[in-house]
Image (cartoon, rainbow, N blue to C red; front, side, top):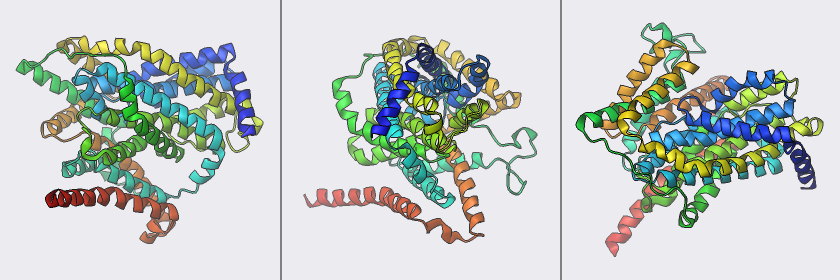
Length: 501
């Protein structure tokens, strides 16, 4: 503990230097704006601004502090378009649409934004505390996760996914299947065989995640608004109060704490990230609350869980990057590249050889999380007033953001047609009362599941027994059985108890 406190004091002496303090605030503010733009997201925001940080001639610790500020600022800002427009900025923000947007439509946009800000602050801060105290130890545990363990983790995530739409589990699974099918489009990396490409050269490399999320959410929302406009049903949405009450905080306190811990530990595992963390925590909270909650209709716990988890996972993803030199997510892969660009080699000796970078970054994350709360809470009312824009004007604004977001990152005109096609698919699915979140999570988890399953079978020369030979995998399978069958048994038990009464 003395070593941690000594390291933190050195880190704060670096992070509180006027230049670094300014860079933290600049990174957090820019990250919030980037995250608020649908489609840009933290990974693209950090990638775009990396050359600028390098060209400024900043010291390595200053550049990393700036880029990390953009990273968790974007995780923070991703909630804004998810809640207000039902358009998630990135995969980690998808789950925030499930209850955040219904809250906005009920006239609780300010309450939802404030609640997500507090949940993000607690999740991010708790993750930094755990990173400082247990980082190196957790990194040693994380690298013991083999491909078969990741397969078990993905199955656990899918089991959590099956609970997302409550009684409509079949529709949820069908939606996840659509996501898996979309994930399989393109040339198979192992065999070179084209899959579902229909001889269209523009999709030989697969469909970009950004195209799928903007098409299914952004364009589908656009078509929904146009439909309502044609029917004459458009009306201004009320914005309500713009603060979170003490009662709200008491309602979500255990949700935030549980989701922060789960989010951090999922984030520590390389290759998982915010999307897996938010899916697992949302499913877990829904199972725990049971029939007492209104998940999917604007339950504050359904918003607090993914918001705390995706910010905590951002802190968790820093653990393998700083201690082992292994990126925990796509964004930390770019941060790792930034360190290598400055001739800094992350790894077990980084805390001893370059403490100004390792501890300076951790201290800056404490400051950044607090700054994000201070910056964002006063702006909640301003963000919420976006809903006071008449929806006939909001419709073209969503279209412009969707097209700019996709074209600025992907740069292929074909993908603009693709988001329209996916938008029609998303609109039809909405009309049939399918949730779109399982489609996105099926798309994201499908890649991870297939890659790790193939690696595991390659290691075992095709022997499927490898999938349940490790302790980690067995524990995850037990949790999967628990999350599927225990609620069913409880429901049967309650029915019998009610009949007997």
